[in-house]
Image (tube, rainbow, N blue to C red; front, side, top):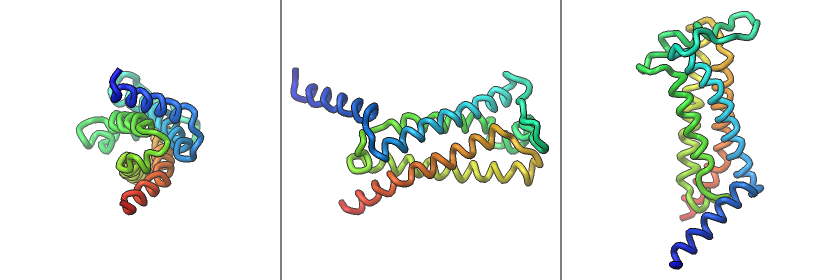
Length: 174
């Protein structure tokens, strides 16, 4: 077996061990990002099913001003030429491999990865905040699925920041 293959095999085993068993704070946050992304994807999957006509109604909590059907049928929800729930679902799904990419010390070894993850998360949190603002001001209704998705995006953005800070420090030290 060539020396390169042995090296790649060792690198693969190290990556698997770090991702599955590592206990660093960065890995904990990356696992939380994956968990929040999956929760957000669940909410946006329901919205996507409604927005594309697969289901005809989204149940709401029995609280005043909750009307997910109205919010997700609004002009705002379709203004990009595609239902916003499908875009949010795809974006949340992209967080999963991004959070799983690289070993425990990727902020030092691959500093661009955490910076890309944090930049993506910051943009998505800003967009989620804008949509969150639209519900009470423009639509005059709330969507529990959208609230769940927005909270997940806010959490993901916060969770990416510490590793991105380390990565930025690493790039400055070079």
